[in-house]
Image (cartoon, rainbow, N blue to C red; front, side):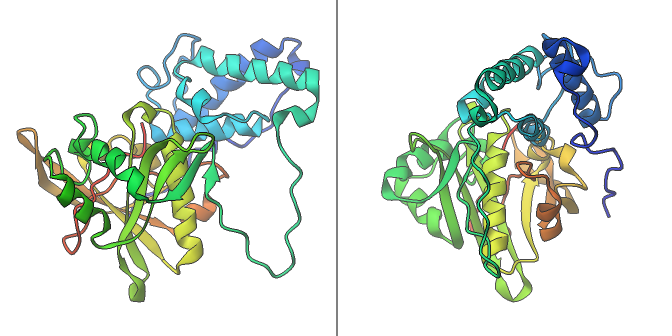
Length: 324
């Protein structure tokens, strides 16, 4: 059993305002440093303005999305394009400061939020297919060239379903639906431009399980956005079908990209030593499980994440890590 982290949630605790310190910009710096220290559970973290979120502080996919969720608690909505440009501590504090000045000038409605509409009594919540500037859309013929690019790209192909092999277009198209229960193309909400795919397959309805996978465009790695889209897909699966949990299988070089989520976003249910061959060596293979309680316990906007390689009974849907 994987122990659940006892570290305090970085979302908890009072949120000080600039008026309490007299300098809003300095307060943004201090608040962000405090958040990052709690998120990384490391008091030695040096969140200096020029520190890079991934390379210097070591934020992985899940931690980056947790940071975006924390930013949202401060009344700042981050678009997909803005998130992709957040690489340093200084860029995050500048985003907070700019949004704060805009709110001061325009009032609370400047955040673009709408009043929550009451839901009819005894009615289930509606399905949600949009989050953080990304949307889930049904797979159509026009998306096949983009997905074929992801499957054969030197940046993503070795992580996904063909593990570096280059299939013919015909073979790839057949594999797109083999063993698949449901799948969506992930697009930018505003333009409809495709950026990734999420898929569920090898469903075992009597036992309440399925396997899931995801792959995204390389330039969205390290942004946290792919994880957000993957969480949207997981919520959809648990809302529509009576699954107890969904499985992900991945080699260790993918697992390292989401390891911070162990025990909170997912459980490790198995590890096969020296199981997967790639690039001159064998890699361990992890079996991860995301249960309903993992999804229910997540703060709004925060995710579990994953990549995946299918069970022996189905096609190889090994996915690129959702993000890091």
